[in-house]
Length: 465
Image 1 (tube, rainbow, N blue to C red):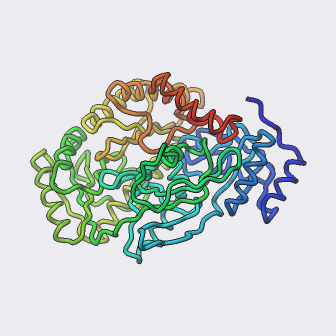
Image 2 (image 1 turned 180 degrees about the horizontal axis):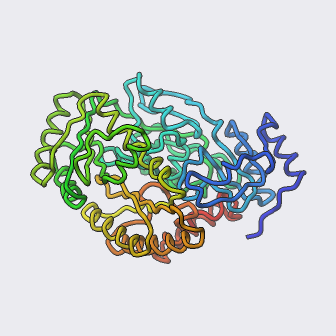
Image 3 (image 1 turned 90 degrees about the horizontal axis):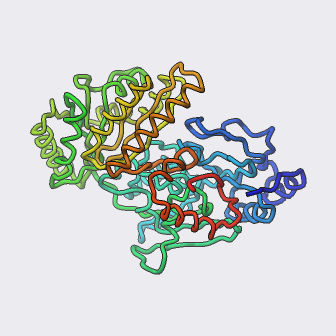
C-alpha cells in the first residue's frame, strides 16, 4: 500500500496538534534508540517523532495521519524483542512515554486507572503501601503498562494469577480513524457482545492506540517465600513440575534455569549464585495469607520434588536470600546479552511435559549449525526463552544460521502442540512463523479484522499480519 510522504508542511501541522511544539522531532533530531527495540535485530527510522501527553493529542495526530495516509507507530519504552515498536514504513512514531500518570485508585471496586506510559515497576511501588496487588509480573519491570497490554504480557506469576488480559477491566483507545472509544468498565464480568477489549489486548498497536486502562487489583498477599530446588539435569527438573502443580497449593511461580545461564548471571552481577551444586534448578515461589500457610505449601512441594529426584530443597526464608535468587533470575536476559555480541530469541510455548525434550532438541539443532544457545523460562506454563548468541559470526553467517535453527525449532513446536509466542508477541520478527503455525483460514480472519478496523493499514503496519 502506498503511503504519503512527510513534508515540511506536515511537520508544521504536527506542531500545531500538540501543546508544546518542542515535542515534535524531525528525523535528524531523533535519537537512534527509537530506530530499534531491545534486541536491535529489526531497525528502521521514523520520519518524525511526536511525544503525546494526552488522549486528545493522540487522537489529533492519528486523525491527521489518516487524512494524509501516513503510517503511524505507537511506542512505549521500546523494551520489546520482536520489532513491534519499530517504524518499518517510516512515517510518524507516536511516543506515549510522557502519558505516565496514575489517575485513580478505586478501593471500593479494586481498580487502578492509569495512562499507558506508566511503568510496571511504578505500579508496584504505588500499590505497595495500599494493601492492593497487580499480579502480572513480566521480567522487564521498566516496560510500560501500555506495552504490556499491547502484547498481553505474561511473566513469572502467570502460573497462579494468569496474564495481563486477565487484569484489564476497561480501555480507552484511539482507533486508526482518530476516533476515541471507551471499552469495558469497572465491572467484574461482561458477556455483552463481542469482546473488543480483549481483541485490542495483544494486538500490538495494529488496531488502535491504548491511551488509558482500568486494571483489576486483588488483595496483596501477606507473605511470599521462595525455594530453590537443584536437580542433576533438566529432564529430572521438568519431570517434577507436574507433581508440584498437582499439590494442594498453587505455586506463584515455577521457573527453570540451567548452570550456564546462572554462571552468566553471576558474572554479570559480580556475586555468586546461592547454590552451584547442580546442572539444573527449579525456582518455586509461594504466597499466601500467612507464613504458616506458605510454609505448609513449600513443605509439601519440597517432599514432591525430593520424591522426583531433587538433590535438595533450599528455602530462601530471608529477604536477603530471596533477593539473591530473584536478582539473578531477573538479570538472565541482560547477562546473556552481555556475554556475546548480539542475541535473538525464540519465545516459544509448549506443553509442560515437552519442555525438556524441546530444549534438548533445540540444543542439538544449534550444535549442528555451530550456533551457541542459552535458555531459561517459565516451567509452570511451558513458556521457554531460548536465545541464539552471535559471538564472532559475520552478519551473513549469523542470519543464515538463526534462520535455519529457528525454523526447525518452531516447526518442532508446531508438531508437539506449541505456539510461536508465549508472551513477547509477534511484531515483525515472528510474522513468518505465525503464518506457518496457523491455518490459512485463521490468518485470513486476522487479516479481515485488520482490514475492517484499519482499512488504510496505517496503524503499526508490517506487524503480526
